[in-house]
Length: 265
Image (cartoon, rainbow, N blue to C red; front, side, top):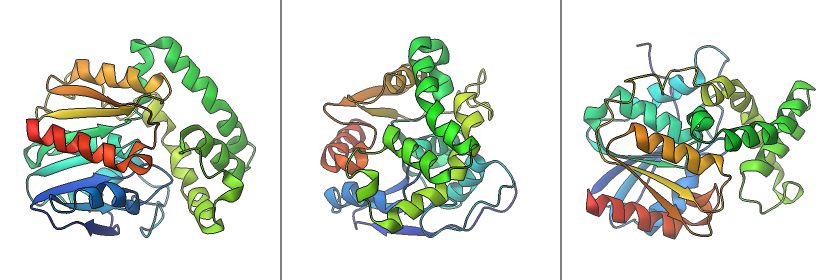
């Protein structure tokens, strides 16, 4: 394996339980602050900025973006710990668990966006996702990077504040990260990295929690069901009233779900 990319990382909390967390697209490691503060006495949470996000360097367009972030995350796995990922970060966390199951005590996938998992599970939900994605993809193809980012954020962001009301630095950070979103389409929609290939997930034998928001698009629970069928130790939990950004919008409920899961396991 080639040398892991150098990425920015930070830690929250001072509890005895080590946790490594991977944020969603267009965000950064600080997205975990609310969850970590709700569990500050219980966990020490380390999070890193994926390439082209936060304080990490930009992806140079070379290599596989998802797997480069997997390498960056694996470099932080110094001993057995609980691994948590959100959205695209959940797909990174899943690949990390596949690569080093011996170092992952438990795995929590929050709103995983491995859309290819829903293709056969719920064809209608997958088709709706493809249709909903077209405006952002068309804007990108037309060279309007900011509009593509705005439309993508409208689909998957928390809803408030609206794009014009976001601080200019926040909008610029999202626009900066948008190229890696578009470059990851084949990985997420077509499973180009073979995460769902026969037998590929057999090594993921640690306890797995798949956590979703009740208000998320139908493709998300379809992904959860599909992954639960493939992962013998997986269970699906839903947070009432939450949407895709639940670690940010519902940190206390997310922390409660993690606490409950870790207590059981």
